Each structure stands twice: as structure tokens, then as C-alpha cells.
Length: 231
Image (cartoon, rainbow, N blue to C red):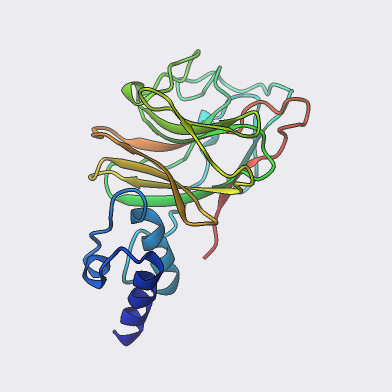
């Protein structure tokens, strides 16, 4: 228990705004601290605080035909050659996107995605029943809780209304935190442990991680999105 208290005391000093009691009972403040503080603590005492870094992989059955997935299903990139794949209801046919292989109907989950050297991308969480065919409105009203990058430095949260975000253009890894019962989807600069944006909503169906590496733009945006995993 002494080790646990030392870690909690260290976290308390770093935040400067949370009490030791708040950390012990997990009543972490909304958005800015809730995901990163739990993840930082987890690295030193997995059995005490949650969530840990969730095991997220990509679902090949949902991938747009122009997306290539790595063998370990942790990287996705866009290529110009369209693959001959069955046009099933699960597969995206317009948005160059792919979903995580596991959906969530409860609990708290956290994963990180490497976005370094990309000029554009879209990341977040979507509900299971989204339309995978054609172009759709990407908003919480339609079951999308997403942030995106365009033109290397134009960040936006696709909320209602959409909100521009001021972020460091050297952003290399995005953390995504889902609290299903709490109705929260939050995004973080995973390297700096700083809050980017939080959506609040009520979830009533299964939710999936969403990954869109966007077009490769003649190799200007050829870097893949990579799901970070480090035990």
C-alpha cells in the first residue's frame, strides 16, 4: 500500500488540482484529467487503477478497399490501387475508414494512435449502426464522435457545431478515452498528457474505434495510422 500511496502522491503533485482522496476513489475531473491520470497510474500499478491501455486491433471486414492493413492489424494506410474485396454491409465504400475489431457496450477504455508525419486524418468513436455506404454527415447526431486534421495544421472537433482546435502541429500520438456509462469521449495529446477535446452524450448501442488515414495524396500523406501498444 505504501507504493500505491507514493504513486498517488506523485500524481497529486503533478496535477496540483486533485486531492489524494479524489485519486483514490477515481473521482477524476471531467475531460482534462480522467483518461491520462488513470493511464499514467496504470503504468506503475496496473492492479489499482483502470482503464489500462486497451487491446485494439483493426477489423479487416470493415476496411475500405483502398486501405491496406498490416499483418498484426495495428496499422492502416491508403493506397491508389483498389483491392477486389466483397462489398458487404460492414465495409465502408466511400469513406476511407476502418473500425476496430471489438466494440464496447460498457466500461472505460483508452487507446492511442500514432499520427506523426501525416497531413490529415480522422479519429474517434462511432456507433455500430452508422451507414457504411456513401458519404455521411460526421456528427454526434449521426453517431460519430470524431476529431480530424486537415492541411497539416487545421484541427477540428466534429461536434454540433464543429469546433476549430488550436493544437501543436508536432502532435505525434492521439489518446482516445471512452467512458460508456459516463457518456464521455475524450481526446488527448498522448505525449504531453494534455486534453484536446471532450464530447458528452448518451450511448445506447455498441461503439467502435474509428480510424481514417485519409487519401495518400501522391505520397504526401502516405504514413499509416498506427495503434500504439506497449506493455
